Each structure stands twice: as structure tokens, then as C-alpha cells.
Amino acid sequence: NGGSLELWSRYLPEATVLVGCDIDPKCGALAFDDARVKVVVGDVNSEPTYRAIRAHAPTFDVFIDDGSHTSRDIVLTFCNYFRHVNAGGTYVVEDLHCSYLSHWGGGIDRGDTSMEFLNLLAAFVNSAAVAADVPGTYPKEPRGLYGAWQLVLVVTDRNQNGRIDPEERRE
Image 1 (cartoon, helix red, strand yellow):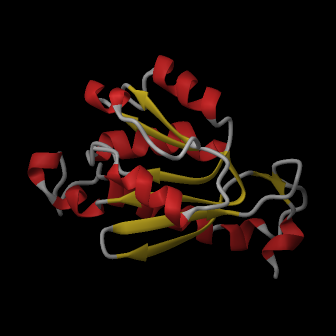
Image 2: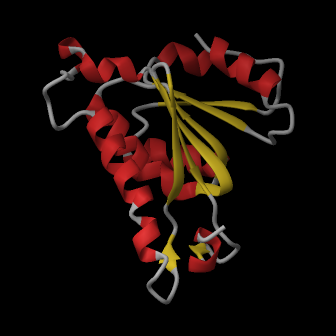
């Protein structure tokens, strides 16, 4: 219903644009007092919707996935949009309890859930300690994962050319 966009516009007063995406066509008719708020209607992972979102915001300081809550969509959305999170930015995944609920395609004993993906991502972040001893630079990657009730924040920390200098890892 667009209420979270109004909330985020108050919480992020320095944001130049806030883009919401929903599959419900009714959301396209919503009117906001804040001119920074834009709404794109469609599946966040379809090509036309992806292009429309990126037309409003080519990069993101904060990206919040509060979409379908299915593991498949959460992982696909991360793969499509995390690469566009700016240096020092944050990628947020909400409602992760759905990863454990069968009617959302989850389950405590499944290996293909969003939580399993995020666990693998955490392992990748921690493998950076080994990579720090290898000369060269590394492609943009998550710098840390922080969890809370039903929520994970994934943060990045890049230099200006989009690559992490191994010396940064030693700090």
C-alpha cells in the first residue's frame, strides 16, 4: 500500500530518490507528497522492471528487499541488485522467517533457502581473511553480514574503482 515508502522517506531524509517496486498494479496509482518517491510496477527480477528501476536509480546507497519473501526471489534479487549498491552501502533482506516456512517454499531442513544462501555469503565474507594474503585486488564483494530478528544487512566497502584493495582487509 506504499506505507513503507513514506516511512523510508522520513527515515532517509538525505536520499535523492526512493524507488519502490510492487507487482500490484494498484501501487502504480499511489500518490506521494514526497517528489523523491517513485513506484515501478512489475516483477523486480523481470528485465523491463529491472530497467525501469535502474532508470530511476542506477546505483543504491540502501536497497531493501521486502518483496515476495520466497527464497528463490530473495536470492535472485540479491544477484541482480547487490552489484549496484554503492561503496559503503547496505543491502537489506527482510522477513527471513519465511525461509523456514513451507508455504513460502522454505523449510528448516532445506538447502536451497534464502538463509542457506546468506550463510554461504557469510562464509564467503570470512574467506576474505585467506584472500588478504594473496597479492592483487578482488572484485566487489560483501564486507559484512549483520543479522537481527527476521532481517539481514549486507554491507559493502569499496574504493572508487569498484575493487577492494587487500590492504583494506587488514584494518
